[in-house]
Length: 251
Image (cartoon, rainbow, N blue to C red; front, side):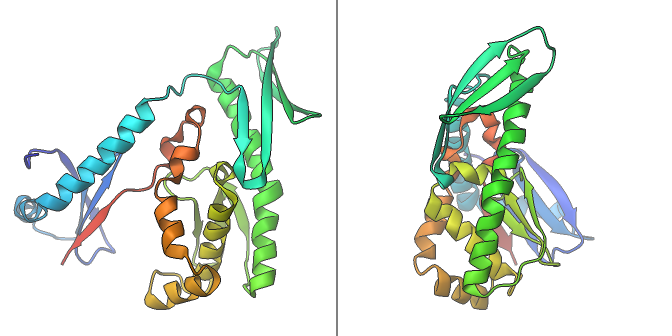
């Protein structure tokens, strides 16, 4: 691969060094500090050619996987691995213009209304996933906090673009509802990871030492988590679950 690969330059007030980001959405992004001489960028990219080639290959594999399964279909079954629930889905069209989802006994979901509107159905499932996440992931996090001796503030449920969860400086933990599609052990790791961030809001040696205390095999969990977005079904428009991709900092 030649260095003719297109890239975007983004200026960051917080950046101290040049950073290369590669993602399926944005391709190659060169993050530079303020007042950086952009004429130096081609030479820096030349120095990082091997890294760029490797990162580009990883992103290409992700894109190929995502395109292998169409996202234009609505599901017939939904498996929420994190909480051990499997749901069958039935569609019942009617003259109503909106779409409504109902839970029925026996883990059945009934979708009624304008079921031919695929996007409306997806939005309906998204609202249902958000409710399920609030009902299961939020209490799960609170229980772990009590058991492990952490203090947690607010907990939010979102559909985050490139993270399974995050922790703010104020201790607010945001949980990606798509975690419901992951295995229980990976969700447990993500929750503990974020709880450790309430103590160390960084990825310092002290942070990873604390993580190791609670998840001794965290390195293996991190490895599995890098591919866990593949567990999220295509109908969710799962581009939002693909990790941010590789990064490289140039001192």
